Length: 125
Image (cartoon, rainbow, N blue to C red; front, side, top):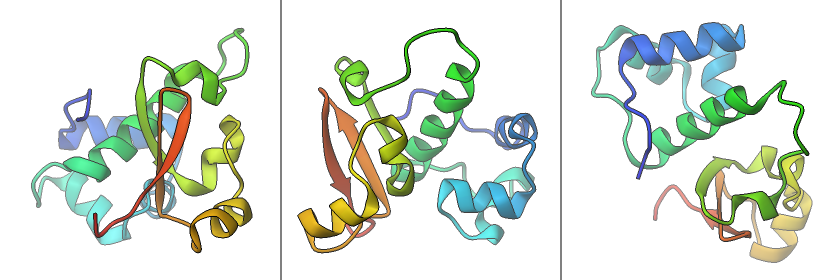
């Protein structure tokens, strides 16, 4: 379940704060450019499920950037459940994409970190 309410203006504000074009933002969230564009313009329903959780993860990364605290690691996620693009998991102490392929046979589009453990999030799940 997502912690934030993703309205078109909230999505635009996040993208602007990141300093990204819509194309770069869509890639970071793991969606097509047209999807991100439609979210921002309010042409489609606000994102839910995995996509809302990905936005939460991107927003969470923005919120913690610049803090003078220890680096964010898997062990820091014990009370939380966070879903982020699989390509970013290694930045937080998770496996690399190559390690995911070795472990699960392919790299998932996203991973969920909960209780200090990491698990794949498949689009068809």
